[in-house]
Length: 287
Image 1 (cartoon, rainbow, N blue to C red):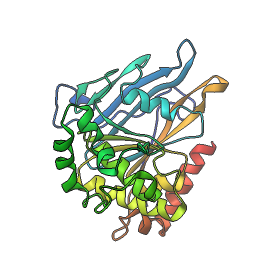
Image 2 (image 1 turned 120 degrees about the horizontal axis):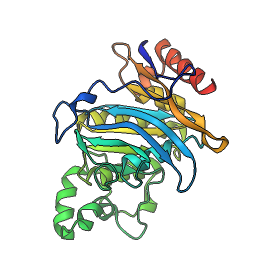
Image 3 (image 1 turned 45 degrees about the vertical axis):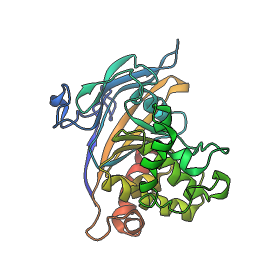
């Protein structure tokens, strides 16, 4: 069942914004009590245009999967770009372990919707590409990546080409490549949307297990409410219409508690608590 729901200030028509993070007082350099990733009062705009997203705050902790859901065009990817340092906000701050990294790229790992594996490179060379780009010799990079192949469910695919792998296996390779970027914060942009329904279900469970095992802090954006509810411990619901002149804000943070014995996404999706959480998110999106 839902443990609690946090209304953002202004969700009922007052001032805009979100409830402050429980650790917002822990800013500083490398603060061990700070969330792994935190955004404070981000306002974002397209170049030369009006605000797209206004006064958005969110946080993600180690080992946690958090989802950001919203309708198409409401600014979800724009937020990921700001969190990854690809764009600078109009105002607000991005913190990584309490350290200000606003507008600084390369601090978090970012996995896009498509796997973007290079067709002309074998799987082992695709996954260790971040190491090679970082200056590591190819042989050394391969030696570092090879022991991880089994852990990521890729044993036996080292010398195969991307075109020889299924969609799910390609996504595993893309995630391993993301992991080898060396960051413990991962941003996912609709990572499973191109997969068939059964593979998508398998990959959700697999990713949640790997994220917990590796103590990653994950923020995923998705249009799929089922995906968000099945994977996330918390869901930020983004609402607005930037193209219509209404900047998006976070309407509410929904915290989801899984029943005992139903922690895996595929198990939780069969419970009444899943339906309750899904109804809550859908009602916020439709409001």
